[in-house]
Length: 540
Image (tube, rainbow, N blue to C red; front, side, top):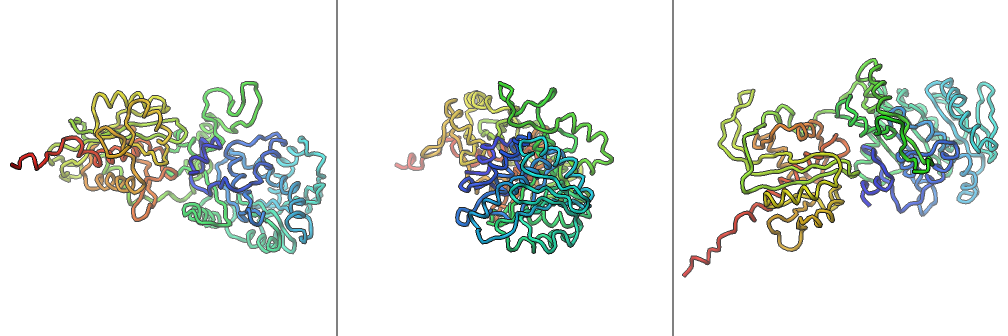
């Protein structure tokens, strides 16, 4: 399964921007953690369920946890407290029995430590947040609270002890440790807690060190190092004992709800009215989002600075901005290439793109550029002749409208081809509907009007064609907001010796990807526009 198919299976309308991908072939303790969370009155949202399923995957050979290190980066008001509490409770209740089964020679109780920057912060979290939830739940009879100063802990009937500590060098020193949790670890300026936790875990079966936080500031060097390491491992796909999950949005307008919905997995898209997501027709609740669009608007209004808001809710590190992508020419260059005078002739191709959730789709036309060079930019540069021209034909919500619109365009324009990725991208879901609408799918030798489905290498090649055309000034477009807004947030990722547009790192690039598909269809099918003369016809 692709990561997009896995996300769809979880109902993730807001998947992680980057992160470790769930391996469906592995068992996971995530199911049991989700059950405990429901008992605590906090049914897990899809993002939480995905996170615990990934983080608590089991190695089929050893039956131990695959990941010893879990870093979870999510915006504020996403439900970090409930996921931490459920993971801790599961460790206390389930792992004493698991240890007896898989590591019978291990001695000592399961020991859990929750760490905050200051011990008082950790104590407040225990008394104000964790303890009241547990005491109101069916698990209330499974533990007793030890609240005397300096030794606060929950003592579970399994023998497990769940204590608190501060971000100090001697946290957990001299004792074994099975689960360590660093909450809001952006406060940490060094790795002292990690250096205290790690030795205490060396001899334990299936230990885990969890770090849960929003992004930090320019002082958060420890967090920054973990984030960069996690991104590198997740992007490479290499096997590792590190699990990394990041929900963030690095480029979109900070005040745009569409930007928020791309990175806040607990944000309800419904407006106005209360969130009913996850509630069935009988009123039974499976889960609900924890924040509304109005709540985030209010947070933006009262934020001291834009950077503070971006750090807390978009997971953008304060004091740093994402560097410009060298593969994407500046927006000013893109704006130099606006030309609304050109119209398609007999040779035109269309490209289609949608998102995995089926919330939006675009159809973009491409045709050969016409007219002599001579246009002069604001900077006084004389542009070369246009090689291609791009126009957004349709861009709107949903995908059900796409097949009928394509059938209409196919009849009216007789395009040389339709650029549609049927190999595994999100437009794969349109394959059958397009066929039923009369769009001819690939089969045998290419024919005019047929779908041209690019391979990954083709998509990379035509991504370069588009961006290099912008750089050289040989692409023209009509300045449509739908395409320009996509260009503004476009970022690339490596693909062999070339690159692709990165759906995770970019914002909404549906129209730009559709343009790339259109260029591929135009160039790979334009020879079908005019019959090629047979040289033997003139031989006597």
